[in-house]
Image (cartoon, rainbow, N blue to C red; front, side, top):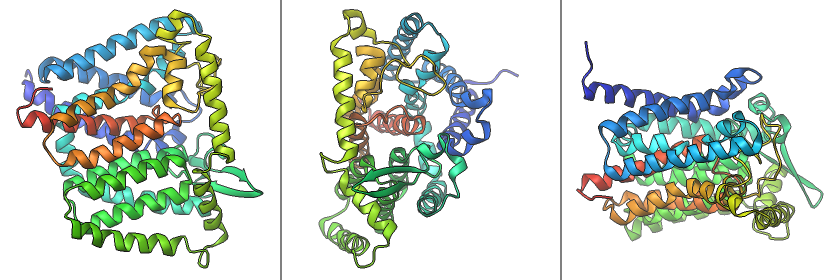
Length: 413
């Protein structure tokens, strides 16, 4: 029997929901397929999701979404063709291009109403994911229990940084890198608060941000977490509620950072977190070196390289023997080195779409989403974080969700 259009879309929504949840657990799936051909499972899954997104574009999306999808896909084909010639390999750019456009199929699905249904029906899932993640990060900070979950062994899970003769550890758990934990959990927190915000949820979300910041000791956690908290304070809470909310949070931070109750581990983590704000610290001087190197590479580009870069994947050492440049310690610089202005276009497009929808959306949740997305953009600009597929999937869902809210009020974007 031939399926109706609504039945097809319903099946597609189920596939996207299952795929989104699977991608959130990338850190658990990758170790199981490490060393096998199945390590490319995310790329294969995303290729299939692009096919499903094309079906949605054909059957049931607004014009603005369809244009964004087709324009992005066109740029992808151009970059794949040019990069394959430059690198002498079709696999490398095909594998790495998904680090630029993983957000796109989820954006189409979410803007089509799939994101709203997912967010409104998964409150318990969000809660358990947040709680388990926080517990896992704390355990990872204090033990080596999750060492095998790490695809790069000690480079990530046992990621130590020497600073003034002290060594701080950066927990990872299931997030593949310490800098990516807040990008994923921040998006989940936004969805969790959007379902049914309350004072208890708000306090719990902020405590989560503090735990992630301490256990991962990353600049990304400070940027995304700080912007997330500002968004929370502006989101549909009256002044006296904000004041009540701030009292226990300030008290918790004062207690947590009190040197009198700090263990050696927490003291080292605190020094590492504070060191992120010191421009002369070892991590930041290394970051400045990468930026300077990337600018030097870009300054030597030909006209065509300014348009299409040196080749998609030329900065990624994973499964790639064609590495010719550093990643620039910035998602935007990395995109320019690899894909030129076309690469930067793919990286900033979801943020442009969000800004466009923000100006038209009347739902107050846009303030909550804005804090998170602004933090992700800033942190991605100063570190190579946009290529993380789970973070991109969350970005696509949230941007598409806001498009859906705007379309609900009859606004054309």
